[in-house]
Amino acid sequence: MNDFWSYWYFHIPNFILAAVMYTLMGRLLLGLFVPESWDNYIWRFFKSVTDPVLRIVRTVTPSILTQPVVIVFSVLWLMALRVGYLVFLINFGIAPMASQGG
Image (tube, rainbow, N blue to C red; front, side):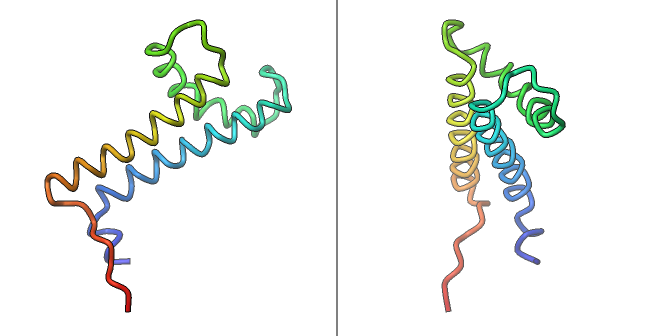
């Protein structure tokens, strides 16, 4: 518990980025089975969480790409952002260290 709060600046942003990344994956998979205009509360939640990310990624991706491809690129960008943030913290010497087992 103490380690979490000692490195909150790593864990909280990493958790948020991971949650959005996995929500994008869920939207991609669910989108294979339901129409884009579906009015289910789960689908609306997926869209409300992921639409801001998709708008940002859509601005840097070619407009010829379809929505599922933009979702895949969004997942990849979020993975890169998570790794980049870890590298940033490592370079400043403030990243959490892996614990030595037993």
